[in-house]
Length: 106
Image (cartoon, rainbow, N blue to C red; front, side):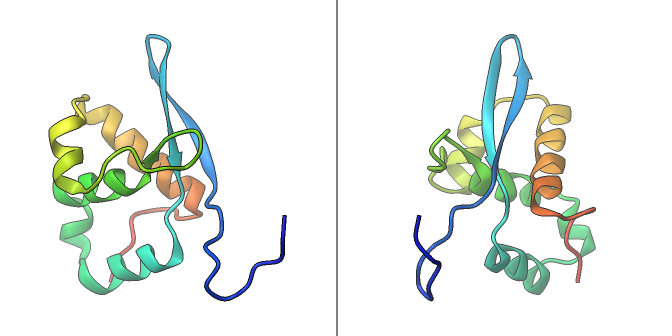
């Protein structure tokens, strides 16, 4: 393990999220740059939309090694076939591990 330097991408925190039926996925925290993007481009209405939900999950659903599972939002929309309650719970867990009490707002 080396000291962080400018330009070195740090490892983001990850947590296991149980989906039930002996199935799980890993979720990672949002980076500061991702949070800034959301704060600059999305308002309160957007942060409660399905598009925002898919955007967050497309970035934060990852393998145990931290590699993203989905290549982009469209890939996530096509490949993530879960109930809405599970997706909302996943988004809340991402915010929790990121240290955000509620979705980012302008």
